[in-house]
Length: 316
Image 1 (cartoon, one colour):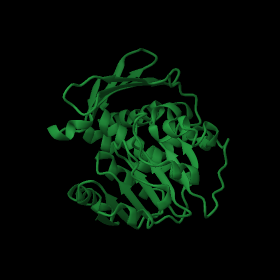
Image 2 (cartoon, rainbow, N blue to C red):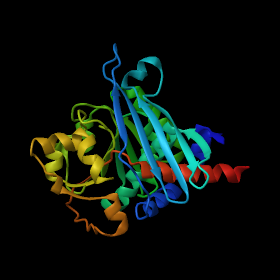
Image 3 (spheres, helix red, strand yellow):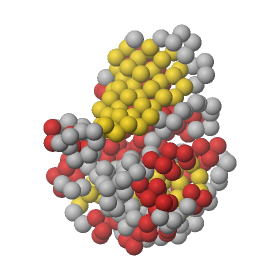
């Protein structure tokens, strides 16, 4: 059994390879039971600590489960909000093949899923990317989106300008103009693609700010009481998700407006399974506004873990 570090996970998961792997996997027969989601009381903290268990397997090949905790106040302890591990098993023998760093795996596969959706949904000539949020995922999202679109300019907004500047430093190797900004509303209007990855409980992006032709990549708001976009965004846009079942119940970005009858489940055009299989063919009009709402899917973790394990074996 191998213990695979975050550094090796990073090296193994190039975005072109991971994005292609995900696109193929969304057409295959991979079993993904509903993930287990537990909110654990955490006295003294602003919010509960969440425990997530996400299993998936492919018959005759491999099985995996991700065990992750999310503690939103961890910035006060100089710790990441997401921590955990991924366990990869050999289905034939039942033996544990490897354990690997789950936060790094999660950041890579989440960003790759966003880029995969962008291939189907954003304008091909998209050049300007706005990142909302300054967490671990932000720099990964920049790299992933830049691997599928000719991104020339990136703007980064966060509650701390210093943290936004740090994100720009982390992507200097891409040779893309990157600027930390303070006025979110002003720069929403300048972006072709807007990617949000925050733990906000109140909308940060508003539909009245949007312009024709934009693509919104909404990655945060992983709980039913969280939101990154307001109702007007949903009313103005064509909505897509990574997987239909989880998206409808796990994120406040959709669950709240559906409960309030602002939109209905039928307003969601398709998920990645349908887009990747060709069951849904989306022909974008120039004026369309599109939204991709991601909540994560264990299929993505399994695909990424297999790539990492193969990379680690070949390194020996």
